[in-house]
Length: 623
Image 1 (tube, rainbow, N blue to C red):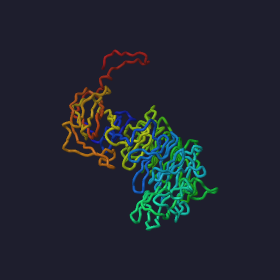
Image 2 (tube, rainbow, N blue to C red):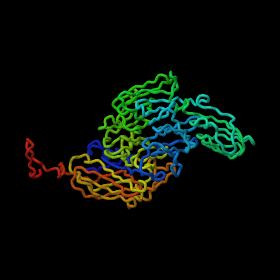
Image 3 (cartoon, one colour):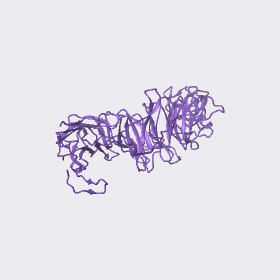
Image 4 (cartoon, helix red, strand yellow):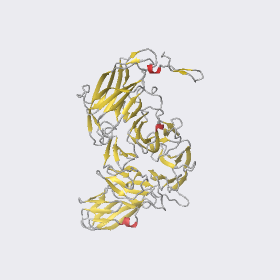
């Protein structure tokens, strides 16, 4: 019989069907192995960001961006909002409610680059140039305390008001105009070297921008770089805090300052008020009451509409260009979602875990139907058993070609699993590292712990915060396309490995238990150390990303001589034993000997049962 070869692994984990009926290139089960670029490889690990926190959970996480391209990493712990200063997590807001999630939403306008924080504690605004300062924006006359929000097309869409679970709210459209949203200040007197602009004393919700300070003696003019720094025309330097109005200058002498300030509670993105007879551009409240189930989250579809995913249904909101006659309709009644973070907008559409039927949850995408162009729900990954997990606290994010879904095993108290889903590759892989938050800064992926007040860099490095990565990969119950009993003499395996890593190879014949048949060593004689390659510690891409370290890996190819019983099916299992990278790209079963067309011996005892089912003779010989 011809050799049996698998040289492209592309199936991921297929655990819904019988393990004999899945793709030869798939796993019937796996943990911390991923299917990528035709190979299976050990997943990357976790690296601590800052220090390990106390017991608790990260309840919000996000990135803000400065005008110079720098990133600011924010998180909400138990009672605090903090930012990472490159070494430690630094407090910004304290005294918040433990258990309230926080959503970090970015918005950029002429007034600056901001991160807004929405939670049931209130609404907060951080100018990313000055991440240690914040503005509290809650005003019962202008807005509410929302559980979630997005900012799109200069307007905030918000939901989760504690007194109105089925109302969808919209803010004013930010026109970014002086005289409407922005107020110009000219000729304000300044003091020497340090001072505070007057705008803040007259309104706690104001922030400033476009600052120009002129020193009277000498005429040096300090202009705003929009990143919190001021540059003097005669070589001087300075700083400006756009939130507090505090400034410092390197040149002494009194002078004048011109600047603008905004109050986003006045016709801005946190002003949800409207006139008695609403006019275009003002705030709004729309009812999405059918079924009485709460709005859980809202995502923007590829058609530009807003899709409110509720517990047992979904609404579609389309705003007209005149902002007068919105279309607000029930989109579907047979779909639903449990978690505020259990959906994500992607380039293909909105992906979410449909838990309307809790006994059969389905990964679903809202995408445009190629016939007709309407947005429709489509089921993704039908060969994966999503019912193995609980999605009450699900978290979704995108990372490279993957959609990540963190969830918990049935019966677990917290998220303990993250599924890597590849829509283009039509595959799902199972990894550990359960997360309460998942965010990316464009280069790296980060997760908030559901167990401690800790943030990790995820899928990075070759250890799990100093510990060997727990793992296994179990292949298909393979019968080599024939029902006959058979034997094999040799097993070949090829891949790439780091010198410090090793892989144990097991085989199970006819469900009799796994037997170790050999171990691949990273320093074995079959490893081609003359053909080194470099691989990045980050999971996406093999080159250095963001300055992270690279590791040296080598190709290997070896053959194991094995002694097998007569078997109908065999199952492979791989377990890595050390630290380091490894992938497997090819397996070959050679010298396959074909025998009689019988079932395995252990199944050949026939129990004669009477027609009425009451009498059984277990002592008859095998046939």
